[in-house]
Image 1 (cartoon, one colour):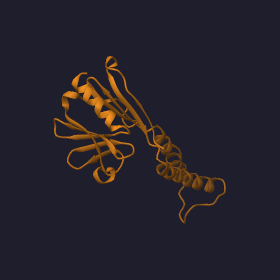
Image 2: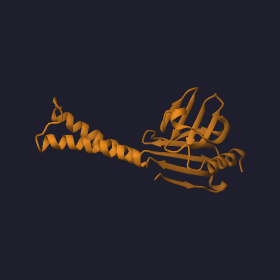
Image 3: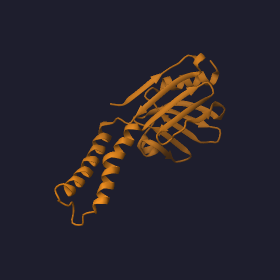
Image 4: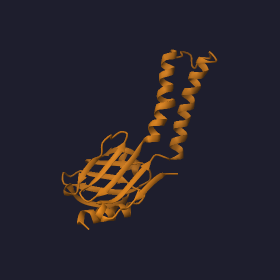
Length: 179
């Protein structure tokens, strides 16, 4: 099940909306777990049982590296991978941690239009994560097929996946109008 939280604030706080989403899809985690188990099995079978995997087994150093990357680091990376979006009175801020270590901002003066929508993540953007589609389209999404798309003055569009796109859009409209 998708893990997320949403907080709405009053105007005096200058934060209208906040949403944080993490990758919690069962199929994704089953895939990551399978890769981790295979890498650990390959390492342990060659290290402890002296049973090499394949006809031309890799040296122990390579097996250790593969196990460290796919058996430890890759799953840990996905545990911490989160999309954070915040609507404030001055801008839309976002961060795809740990890929973005700092918060990124889109000032309201750069936004021409915003609308909630249902989209096709695979067909339109090639999947989930930080994605670039045809025609200057960019998407930041974790799961699902709903979000808010922003059209910018420079002609580009940016989509943010959301578990509550209607609330997200209402917060954007309030922030842009100064209410």
